[in-house]
Length: 492
Image (cartoon, rainbow, N blue to C red; front, side, top):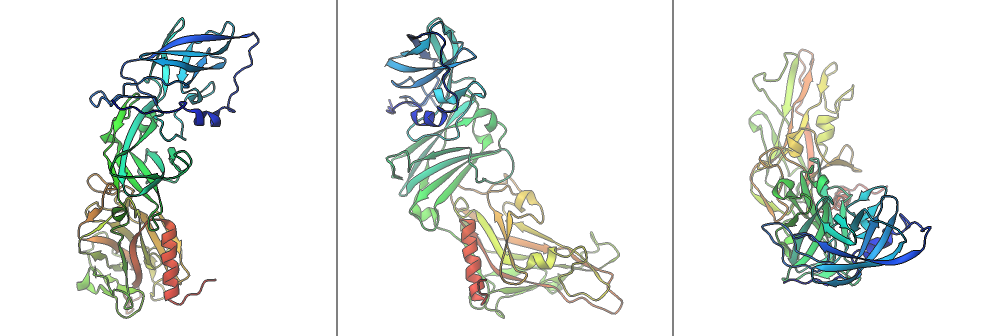
């Protein structure tokens, strides 16, 4: 039997909520009253509890002394406290207005308000299993509690490793977007667990988080963001699971796989390719459409490679009779490599390809063409090969753009936690992901029309400085600054 000793249910949480709604001052005298309380079979709470019944998905549980419970008659809220917890029957006691007759009861006290009813708290607490309970019946002075109808499910994570745990954040997302900066639920260990981070070890460290079951029912995945302490290269890692793989209906207890947080695994497998003669040349990347003039040159310039776009003839497929030229050259990495996308979640490329290919519209032309010719913007597609195209396979999609001090050069960055266009669509975040050959940037469909007779169009070129995976957006900023310095571009 597993025993967890916890003081006062949600005492800390109640501090945040106590000013939200004052207990109404009674017009009659206060009298001390006691109630008996039981928790229906199979329900769970933050109190001392036994091993989960994995078949039923529940934790057998009982109240602890000091737990605070809200009683309401629909117009006021009164507080009672567990004064005696013995076996399956619990005694609740408190000073209540004379004649007060409760119609409902809620645990913990801080989870209930007259305006919002019972809600799952976003701020949760270390060493507490924050399940919500509500009364299923009140018969005279006997209150029966259940987790059904409280909206909440419990997710249990077990962490092992050799790192220090600072904070955990649980994200619940109902779109194809990646993990955002506003987690739904947070537990901080530096402020609640002995005022210091938790030292993880080979013995599992348990984390229990309550989730709004209705919200989870519309989500595509849940993701645990783990904030770590003392790791310079990566202060957090993210572990995501598709919502279809778990049952987060109300009253359920979900046991997630053990997550091992060893420092050498978290910071391993960062991948960055630096181009140019001062670095690794073409870094093993290849230019496609070579037969039509496509090429990559990593030796002429110190800090970047130049990719020449081929003039392609696709048997007039998707080309109108008015188009004189169509340019395309993809760059592709043809070796396998591994990367931990739970740690290095941003893939970025520093290049002027967007300026060359995309920023040709409304009279703005960024490639050399004869007078009178018109240019239609092309397309840029990031394709991971094994997962398909980025952001559901769409062209010209990236998480963001960062400017640089090098003329016309920008950084396009891609959040690897977004959905891709093939198979299950999500990169693995529980371990390093092996990316199969043909990791590709497709740079295509740049069209030049109305070229005067006798004139030609030179093959456009774009530069690539580096491609890589980064932990934070600030790490990308540092890489940009280092590249600017190498190119002799001074800070303003």
